[in-house]
Length: 222
Image (tube, rainbow, N blue to C red; front, side, top):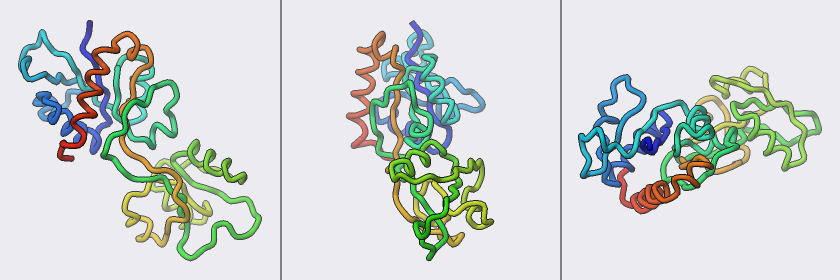
């Protein structure tokens, strides 16, 4: 049977995940010295360097692809932001909330402008159309959603939209561009997701790994 595979979101979540794995007692030397490799072994303390006893593999991918690999079962676990899950997380189990990658979805617009004033249809620019539609549907509002791939803050500055729905950490980028949070939508952090079939077929192994993650979260240095 192949090792348990954990798909990791490249970048900041990858580094935080690595800190968690090392706190769990896994040797992550290959992950720290990955070079251009995308599939890396992680060893338990007694198996370091033994290629025949690789029990866990880390797979490095973009956030949306982490979900795809887990959904299709080529990876058993994934670590990904709740933002990506909220937009495109169907078909996987969300099994553990992690204490890093913390931020929030927010509705933001030009400072000093009352977004809710008047009765005209509003345009909303966002990288997260599913999240935005759900938010305004709960309010009973019809809005025009405009999908943006790059710096979404540009849209209200150029008059393309009345407001944006985006991830906010410190609010510094909003303030620098004359924007402010109108309303918080949803808190976000990194999550562990699991393949539905893997959780049934490899339940004992996967639950043991989850238990180790949960026990290590409070002592890991992120």
